Amino acid sequence: MISETGRSGATRYVLFDVDGTLIDAVDNQRLVWRTWAERYGLDPDEVHRVALRTRPMETFAQVAPDRDPQQCLAALHGLEDEDVRSGAYTAFDGASELLRALRPGSWALVTSNYEHRVRGRFARTGLPVPDVLVDAAAVEEGKPSPVPYLQAAARLGAEPEDCLVIEDAPSGVESGLRAGMTVWSVNTPVAVEGVHRHFGSLREAVRDVLAFVSGPCPHGSQGTAAAE
Image (cartoon, rainbow, N blue to C red; front, side, top):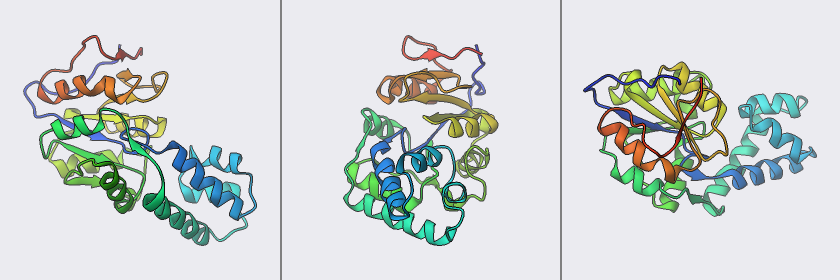
């Protein structure tokens, strides 16, 4: 079993990814990329497949190398902003209960999206927004670089080894692990490679996340420990 970190007696912190972890936005992202692809006469399925594992500018370089990347980005941002205003999406079960139970100043959001979209989605789903939110504009290197999670820890005044990262995607998991943090995966059928623990849903993780911030790392019946 991979050892979980955290110093005895130290204050614990939780750093959450957003899309796929707290907000169910899979269908929204697929629709946005489909609309974008069709606008440029591209195969929507192929574009979405590439977009799932790359940042937007890297996606454009692969699927539309002959197009102006800044124009591509502007078009994508317009579609994403419209989705925040009119798209249908929900918070995952347990998200509101968990976030409202955490002590202010003990948690943060770390997202590859942009702050105004996160705030828009949280307002529509009734989720609270923490004081610390690290978005795509806040860092030069996004996930899987450790920079986003390290910046969030620094802004919270936390040591990396006292932080728990909650993620659903391989790039985010790698980011948290490279930052030297405990990483748990949620909302996926199987554990994301490298995580310390896995939960099939966010709801299943609520009790253990709250236990993490209040004491030693839990090893209760909920969730499964990931094999090394």
